[in-house]
Length: 467
Image 1 (cartoon, rainbow, N blue to C red):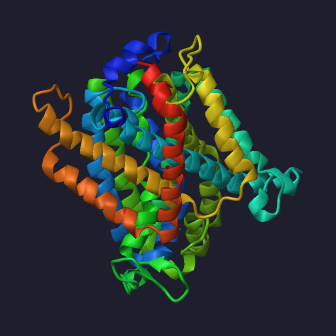
Image 2: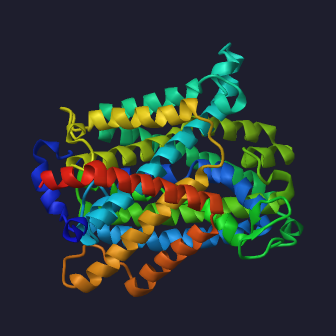
Image 3: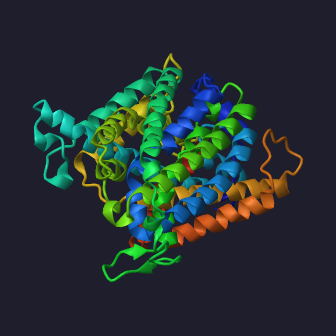
């Protein structure tokens, strides 16, 4: 039994057994950078900077540095693993090849949690921007607000998921090209914010810089605050580069392009986030925009710039679907690879004439649309973070294990200072995990208990039969 639980499955073996289920290679590095930036820059910076400021005060700038630094270390590990094993399953596939089947299942199950919550949350966030436009043209209010606000079904959230899924079904290259155009729109909007807000910078707004201290602590209102508590939440704003690694099988030159896409998108996004965070905290006291659902637009209005605030909101409506596209793309590829391995029903791992995994994309879209459309969603970024942190730890561990197990294997990209970067990523992710709310840790554990039951009830014997 132990041998079965820890059996390894090289990426080449999965791909050789896939036959007609191999994905078409149509993407190059500009598509991958745009996919990464599209996934990373979105709901996180547009909304979570307010949540972070409420948790850490002006020291949210330091929270961004810490979360970004840990993500950068994990991104370097991803880049090395992705170029060694260009497979669509990303962290799941690496774990299967290096750490064993049971670990791979837990990582894949955690990624299902992450991607489902991210896609659903972003869809609901997008509908919050779009709802005023829809109600202004006569759309029923009860169908735009969702159950959490007393509505029936969040139709805009369901609708945008359907549109994005349709793009992915139509073709990977076509959807990636449209994504690149929308990413440019988003970058222009954030550049406008920095350009308008930075001249209002006042050092007095940075005092006191860290009113809640560094480590997580529970305040009188029951909210967990501190620099690390904020970092554990706004970590949500940085990940997304892992979606690039799920495109490995569809990349023309994975040895070069994956490293450029992963590392390039992280460098670009860290620079963008630092500029936006400094401009936001310096322009207005954090007490005035902390926990606002639209902190950047609120800051612009408070600065007497309502026109620019409206422009930012419209840009969000246009460009936020890039986050949906990147994460829906990533989740469908994780599902696809797990189905191809027999962990999920293998009938889902079929490819259309255009080279897209149609069945699994439709299945994924239905799943996240149900969550976004009929279930109240509140403060789930932390739970999505838990799944991501588990995947980042696994990938960093895979990199270190292979450095020992296969030191002479070809590495098209080598992580610099791997024995520093890897442990920093692992220990940093563990520290962030324990900085998450205790309730979040409980729900994550419960989710994985359910996953283990599914593994022993279905996946273990079907994965063995797939060999």
